[in-house]
Image 1 (cartoon, one colour):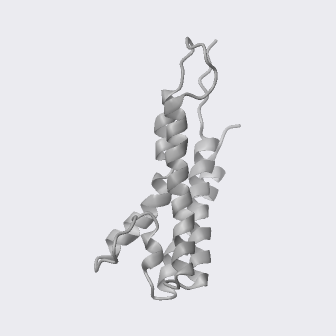
Image 2 (cartoon, helix red, strand yellow):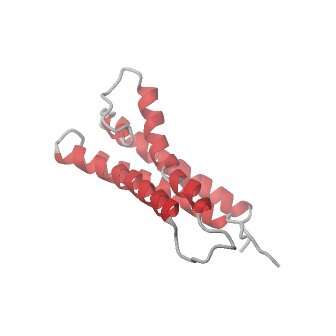
Image 3 (cartoon, one colour):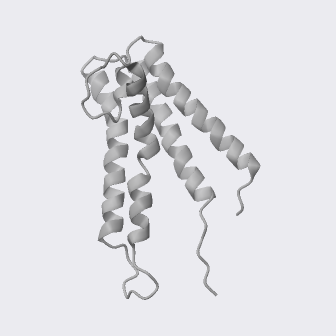
Length: 147
């Protein structure tokens, strides 16, 4: 299935809504801690831009290990058809980042640091961002066809 211009427009709209929800989850409750998703223990800094960039990069860079290690699988001459160690390592690292991105707002809500509404908005926004990246990579995947 060839992805066209409508697919790109839809994916960019969903991505923008995801980032909007992440930013609004912090701005509406005047608590910028949900943007720490992916900053892995950084304290709130006076430079809010740094924290916003780290939050956005969590879900944007989450598929990166999977994408990098996906090409480390066997080639056409290998005897095994299954996934190799590097491919599994890439999937494992991706899952760590994704689970951390979804769990950190829940932990912050449980410790009463952020409001439950901010947690929900942050999780939905992160899910939209990560889902958009997965949908884009699936829509524009190029299969290697050997004749």
